[in-house]
Length: 159
Length: 172
Image (cartoon, rainbow over all chains, first blue to last red; front, side, top):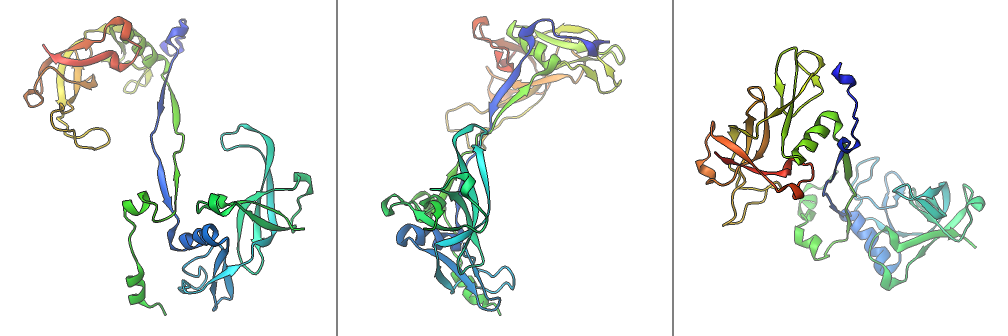
């Protein structure tokens, strides 16, 4: 039967290559804008506080996600220190290329807050990282900051 | 209690210029969305024959249809198809459109020809079998359904084994 037909000429093998041209522009939103502007201009971390639930959200939210109260008037500075809540060691980049040096990605829960940031750990070897390790944020020089999460270079172990 | 008036008053929509002029912080990203689509046996041969300047179809001995573009399986008889058959490079316009916008839905600038894609039933293939291609060498609004057309090919050295090896179809 013809379905078993085989290609005898390899020139007939082929594929069609293409690219889907898409791009996006992400805006931070009201709370995100405040958060990243504070990092960029003042080197501060901001959170918002819900007095009813006794919670401090970092990154800040404009509504309390538990009671839906509007909390946009409650910005406060929070600490740039925290502890490693969980972490992973990455040996490949986003395109699955081998990295020369592995990167450590951690969820850092910030002091005096009920939230935290996912970021890199630096100035530490993968085998020395542990859950509960105290760390602090290292920011870029002020003139190099652009108002995004990479204004934080990494979190390093607290000395 | 939510203060409705305060919320309404504090909402401002972002405009494109706010983003472009850097009034608000933005993250720009262009994902790399590359793909490679496997031609398969039937379309592989079809494209190869286009490079040779010929159009090839495939016949089903069950329903006796000559199918274009060729396929390895008959969806009506539920069986593999049979012989390869060369068909003509002439045909009949089954349907067409005069498009004032390009594929990005942007208006075509004044002076530039409107796009006139058509479904062309190819001579030698079964009724209703056809390919989508461009019509040219005629004013867009003079195109008619049922009009006889013929393929205008690229010169052999420019053909790469693609449907664009046919530049367009022109009225006979």
